[in-house]
Amino acid sequence: MTNNTGDMITLASAEQDSGGSNLSVATPPGAEDFVITNNSASGIYEAAIGGRTAAGLVYSKVGSRVILSATSVFPEFRGKGVASRLIGGVLDELRRQGKTATVTCPFAAAFVSAHLEYADVLDPASPRSHPAERGQ
Image (cartoon, rainbow, N blue to C red; front, side, top):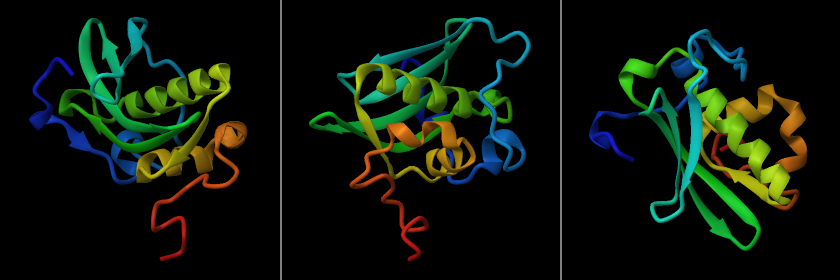
């Protein structure tokens, strides 16, 4: 990512990005320049707004399955739904590519739980492997 990742905040719950549990992938006003890129060398899907890196979603690959590990958002972009749009965009792309996802990131797990339209993208053998999702 092009900005200093030390300034990023890793999201551990839905409330940190959206101000509540109602996660939305709707486009906020003024965010027309929202672009998601795959930095495969670093294993990060990056979201940029107006050419500035706003958020990242760390991932790894196992065959055709992508493990979504952690979501981070720079402080100035928090509370604007950026992480939700990033996760939704990544899941849409994985669906187009015929890949599946396993969610280990707590924020991504909350997003998927709130957006059942992404259930088909989750790997049926291992859809979630976050301890909270396993009841531990």
